[in-house]
Image 1 (cartoon, rainbow, N blue to C red):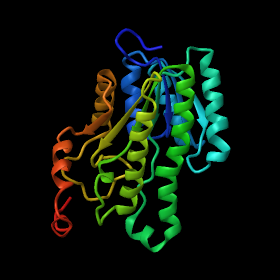
Image 2 (image 1 turned 30 degrees about the vertical axis):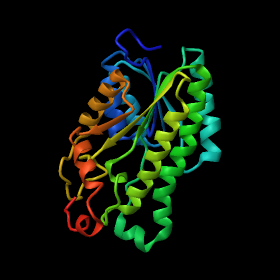
Image 3 (image 1 turned 90 degrees about the vertical axis):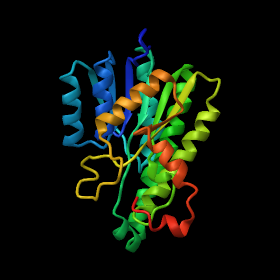
Length: 256
């Protein structure tokens, strides 16, 4: 259950090694989140992430989860997580934070790599998102936070494969939020801009770049306000409102 300050007591992080996800977990643990499930592919990185959160005082369990294996790990594995959590008060917050950036130039030449980006960011998210939303609905309450991206707002030459997958995810999450109205389940879509992280290391930084810690802070604030959409930084809302209407020939020349 959430405490009187609104902080979730329990967190299921889909994408257990995500820098944004872990930054959010650290922030929530500081505000009394006590139980964390880290769902991801078994690896030394997942184990290290669990140890880091345990050092902060949380009870952390790792869960073998693969976004690309919905038949094998989504309904069965996540169903068992929710069943076990029911004995401890349920899961207050699910953070869907896994994703694959890909390499635009390579992915254009190797369509199967492009498919992997799409299946991870969209298909995997649709499957696991529906499983978790149904489980939260069954327990009668909870938050589902979906990590989207400003890249999904408009196709750009430099990342349209990744951006298109995030556009699909964003639309799915908005519709899921509408479907959950009145059920006790609240869906929040988070749209960060360029995030300085290991995933973007070596890439040219875009304007209004942010950090995993800043996204985590925005997620926490959004939860407190019961926001439906969160932009990080907030000024991106205005920027994208304008860019959405720029004619395509002109948009192609804008360095965004």
